[in-house]
Structure formats: structure tokens, C-alpha cells
Image (cartoon, rainbow, N blue to C red; front, side):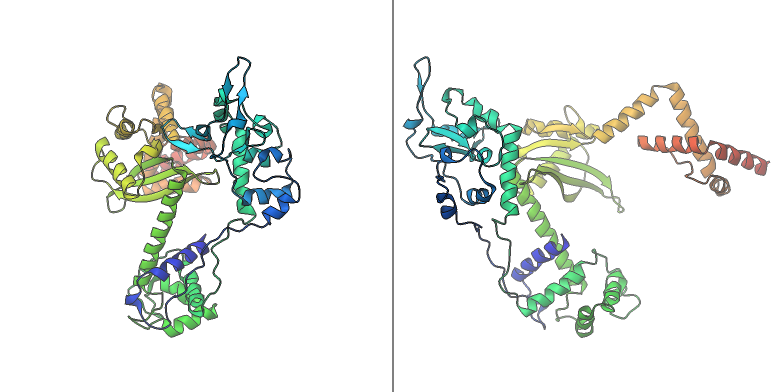
Length: 477
């Protein structure tokens, strides 16, 4: 992942303005080669030699040999949308006559959006339609492998699309294309000497996990040059390439490219941030539909920061969660939170109408039925279903259930009183720690797990805690 990020940043640096960093060695000048689609097989030769007609799914065998699947995937299927469908005519028992319509190649979603059924292929020889993915990868037979022509019951298309086997076959075709390298990687035909040099520098500089400079100066050899340059010096002792680079350009000063100053490193961080964020947004747009999750907490500067997260299903069918940004908050009411969410989506060119889920905690400003954030979002987009945080809900359930029981309230009050007693004086705490060999008593917090930990400690160390109490009583007497 790190090397991929370095590669992406290097490509970005190539097109960036480097007028403020002139000097020797020169900057990167070469550009990456363009991508291209290649087929590992000669499709026309391989398929024609078997007697199959590539554009006619009716001629495909029930079980397609694995050696030919790549050839089928490499070529785009012709859906035959612009031909005469009269051969598809079917006469029913009641005398009615129905034909395939071009509108059947499209599906209307619940949100009034129309999408193309790219999996559906028409055979002019049989007058039937077939599922290309099902024909390629399914070991089972159904009406869409043998040919479908029941035009009265067009709902069967949607039933087939929603089946688990159909979806698995679609994913199998995607995975096969990736595995067999039908899509070329971003490869460069030539790498110039300067580009190789600076890539090696970037690999070493960025691999330091973003350590802050935090030093009094940026001078190599100084004891106060901070973590970043200090580790660069340490690595240079065991890396001849880096040692040569530091000796030549370590303290060259302003106007000389070294990739080790705080200014250029901050630029690298900004470039990587933009690159990663752009990739995330592009993935969200490819998936189209997404869910949002937001929550806020104060930082060390006492500024309330809202964490903005999106969830979506990537091109491989895997659900993923991605952090977008921290947003300083000026208020916590539902309207303010709604404006922040809408502005953030607009900033990244994402439509709230494509949102299909909201995940928040149980606070009234978030989950309120009338004025909460979820209610305001649903007024704009009724399809954005609200899902409360399950961990928070479980915690509230446990806490409220315990508060209804007098014995439980008394018991947990005793646990908190024990913690308060021992932690009030350092002398008492030291006696407790010397007596207990495992975990000591912990304070009860709003998290239900804290009650569990405290109860577990009391159960395992009851005799030791009792002994500590007697010892403190004797000492204080």
C-alpha cells in the first residue's frame, strides 16, 4: 500500500509546479505510459476453431471450457439491440402473440433510475435471450442458460437478477478479468535515471510513518533536529544510498532539492491526502449508492471535531468504510449538523439522493424523530434509512436494565465506592497494588464494559481486596 501511494504521489509530483524547488539533481520529467486493454487469446481463432459462434449464445455449449472463458470475457458481448425481434415471437395457448422488446434490456429501479441489463444477450437464431455470466460460470441450468422467451412474464428478469447464483456469476467474471490481467497495469516503458533516484528518496522519506519534525532546527548532526531527521541519520548509517544523499544534499539550504525539508514534506503529505481522497470519492461514485456515518468529539484544543465517514460496496462486491475528513463544529443541533453533512457531500460532488443509509449514535440531536439529523435527512431523501449505532444501543440497554434493579444499583454503587476509597489516597492505592497480583479495581464509566471489568476484578481478587481493607484499617488506627 505504501509503495503504491509513493508511485501515485510520484506521478502527481511530475505535473506539479516545482518552480520554487529548482536545483540539482533535476526533478522528475518522464510520464507514465497509458493503460490499454489486451486479450491473452486470439478470440476469433480460438472460438471459430471450435464451431461456436461468439455472437450467438444459443451455440455456446452448456459447459464452456475454462480455456475459452478468457476469450469470451475479453470480448464485449453484442446484445443485438438494434435488430429485428420478429423471430422472438411466441404464440401462447390463448392465441396471443408476444415478442421481445428493446425496453426489456433495461431495468427500472425503485428510485425511477433506468439501468441497462448488460448481462442479457439475444440470440437471433433461437429468438431467445440468455444470461452471459450464467452461461460462462454457472454449473446449473435454468431458463436463462437454455434460453428465455416467456415475454408475458417479464418479471422473471428481475427475479433472475436478484438471485444469489446470478450475482455470484457476475462477480466471478469480474474476478477472472482481474486475475488473468485482461486490464494492463500502469507500467512505464522507460524510467529515467533522475526519476529512479528521487523515487528511492521518496520510498525512504515517506516510509517514516509521518513522524513530526518537532525539533529546534533542521540541521543534520544536531542533537535537537527532531524525530524525522534523527531517524534519517540512523537509516543512513546502514543504507549507502541514503548516506550518499544526506552527505551531498543534507544541509544544502534553500533553493536545492533534497526532499528532506519540512516544506517539501508538507507538500508531499498534501499531495498524498488529495490523491487518497480523490480515489475514495471516485470509488464512491463508481458504486453510486453509499451510507454516511458521523460522530463528534472534542480534540486536545477543545474544538469539537465531526468525523465524516462513508460506507459503500466496491467494484469487487466487498463492503468498505472510508474516512473522509474532520470538520470543526460550531453547534450540535439537528439543523447545523444537517447543513454540515450536505455541505460536505456537495464539496465532494456527491448527491444526498444517492445516500441509502445513516449511521449515528442515539443522541437526540442525531436520532430525534422530528428534529434530529436523521429525520431532517429523510425529509430530503426518504431512501436514506437510519440505523442507530448497535454498540451504543446495547450499552444503553444494559445500563437502563441495571438501573431498574435496586440490587444491581446497590452492587455497582459499592464497586464505585471501593474505587473511590482506594484512589482517594496514594498510600491506599499502593497497598491495593501490592496486595493484588492481577488487575486492580477500575472506575465505572458510561460504557457497560467497565461494569464487567470491575465485577470481574472483584470476583477474582475478593480475598486480596478484603485483606487490603483490613491492612488500611489497622494502619489508620
